[in-house]
Length: 205
Image 1 (cartoon, helix red, strand yellow):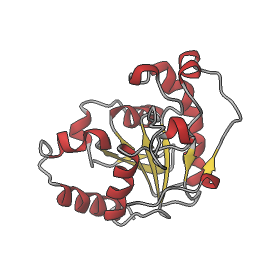
Image 2 (spheres, helix red, strand yellow):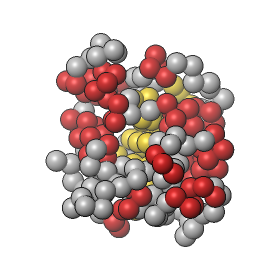
Image 3 (cartoon, one colour):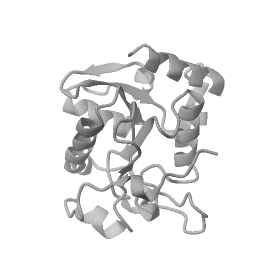
Image 4 (cartoon, one colour):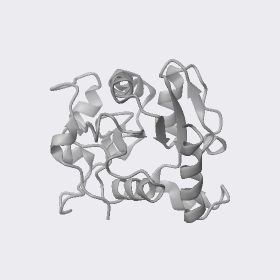
């Protein structure tokens, strides 16, 4: 079980945000990034989970105010990266969109655009060896800043993209919610996927 993050590691970039009316109406709280500000990896999810109020700790970013703190996706991605050699002290976790979209829909292009300034500020602050994006929305949002079009997300998984304007490299991964669905299509079992993550990031150093 990966350790639950300390709420003191929650790095709020604003007291409030009203840029996206539908998200403001739907959210319980803004879900900010969490983790060390000198982390090797900055891990970007899509948007905070709606949340499970009955969970003991892993209630989801919409309720905890911290990215990747759901029982399903949060624990899974933290455990995956820890198995690849990047534990609690090596990763900063955030989302491309900081508020939970209504009815669990995908974030819109406008919402991703509105939130990108927060994400870029986090990348600049942490200055990671790699930005690990999970899923097509997170990957597309980061790469769009670099002017790189996302053409076929699955083909780009574990294919590093150097981003000079960000001073780092983007390493796309499967979103943890869909990991089991797509791993076999990519030709990996979980152990092979873990090993490939470790080798890919090691090759950036």
